Image (cartoon, rainbow, N blue to C red):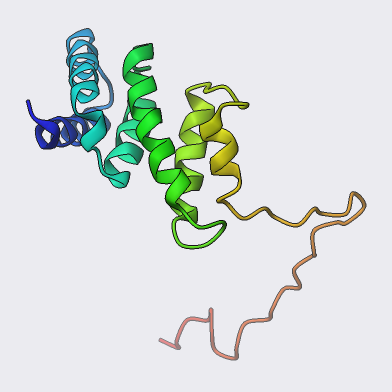
Length: 149
């Protein structure tokens, strides 16, 4: 398998598992083997491949072996350092950050710290603020009524 085959295999496996409703031990072993193979190509991964590898592993519930995860996260750090602070790439950074959380990546790691500087932060909500109550809009005349028969 080359890099492209690995990424396609992961995408295909996720799709099949989602459509069939589960994963067998054989499929899990296959995914682990593909992830192991990704390590050999980690330096060649594009930003989207890094994100996809992490999210597919999470979607399938397969935690890559430590050396595989370190290689993919190292490549993610390469991309994260190139992103401007909060701007283009923020969605990618947010997705990778979410996957890092699921994979229990050290929150004090260089990658997680760098990603946090690339995603917008929501303004703090006042503790006493209640969500607005929607006001019902009456239906327009004739809406919701049956025509005469």
